[in-house]
Image 1: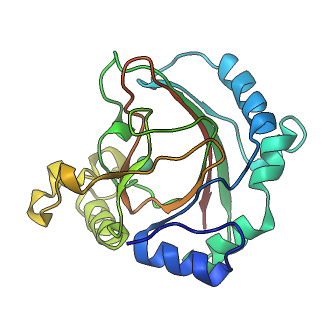
Image 2: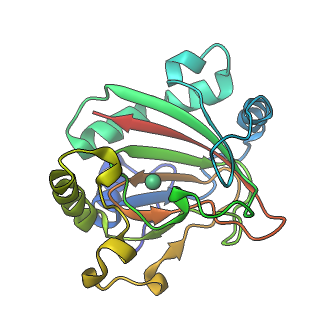
Length: 226
Ligand SMILES: [Fe+2]
């Protein structure tokens, strides 16, 4: 399976890659992340260490909330093609958008929920931009490509079984659904330099934020829903 896309690929190519793999990765999408990174570093600096076990996570509102206060990241995530790809992939119009800045730098407070292989309980379409070089031991997003279809089915069933009680939706494939036969060995880290853009459907089995000692990851992502 090949989930790599190039910056000048057609929307058809991007959509096909997403449909087949549940993710599409453009290595080196941005050559220079410095302006976005500077805005994100400031946001993280102003964020308290809270209940995010791997470090700090800041929820900063929609792209429109940030256009003036954080123009580099606001402009980046307001690119028209990002909304069009969402629309083509999901068949829906965007009516929810939220941006998160995340700095993963701790491994001494246990495993955060996003560190366990999962599908999101609420299906979301995400654009994730690495702002530091990310190797396997730097909290890389790690996935089992092609599992978004299983995830879509499991999410719908799990929500039904939980009668839509969010916390009761079982979303850990290796733990809650061992009969599927997936294992740790199937999980692939998506490594990439700062400027790598990852597009993914959160029905895909994924995890991230697991760092080795003295490693870290700074990234930003935009969440879209219909
Ligand atoms: Fe997730």
